[in-house]
Amino acid sequence: MIPKEITRFFIPAIVLAAVLAGLQPVLAQQSQLGMFQSRVSDNPIIAGEGIMRFMIQGDNLMTQGRTENAILAYDNAVAQNPYFAEAYIKRGIAKFRLGRVTEAQEDYRFATRLNPYVADLYGYGNNLRKLNILAFEPHQLMNQAGATEENEWLNRGINRKMAGDIIGALADFETAMTLGEEPNPGLYKLRGNVFLLMGNYLAAEMDYTTAIELQPDFAEAYYNRGIARILGYNRPDACDDFQHSARMGYSRGLEQLQYLCSY
Image (cartoon, rainbow, N blue to C red):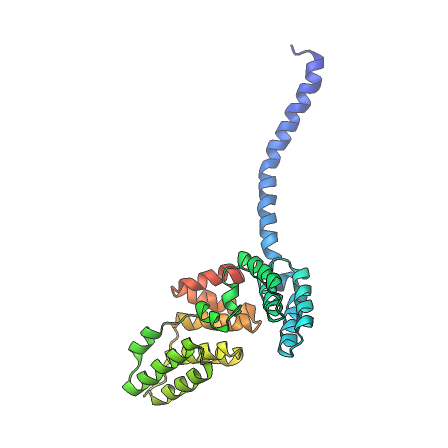
């Protein structure tokens, strides 16, 4: 028989251990839920439409040359969601333009820790960086080109684009488009890339859409349209495009689903 003095302390200890054991699955579930909620809070749509308002406001101020005010708008976006990589990279670009290089680099480092593709997405330091994130297979397209003259204009346009002559590349691609016997979906994708580099995201989206209409299984065109839609603040449709490209076997669509759509 156990003495009363021992029982008085021993039984509550057993009960406490049993309670804690029963709570372990609950605590584990709460931990998983906490992780999920932290990811949900990163979604600018779920976290609040205000963050998009601040981002667009910052973009408009940048266009007007009011860079200091743009930084304040991006500050507000960061304050609303401190884990939104795109707010940091845009603020970094604004600071870089003002010569605040050290601060810009801090924003760059934090943004790329959150999303390793975000600097390319917004052309940090060099607008041509956007080419790194776009689907672009020039050699594949040249093999598809029909007439030799079309091929020549296509080749020159590609070289011009890679050299940074965006206007010249656009003119060459448009000339190539007039020489083909039939509309070439690859050329529409290429011209869409040029429009995207020019910041004309709606025109880029329209060209990618035409490429998809001409070739419904064109995974790279879906992917690039998703990029254009992200840059144009149409995230829901962009994520649908990334899903389409991934289902068609284009692995980069999965990457963007993870970093731009997985919340």
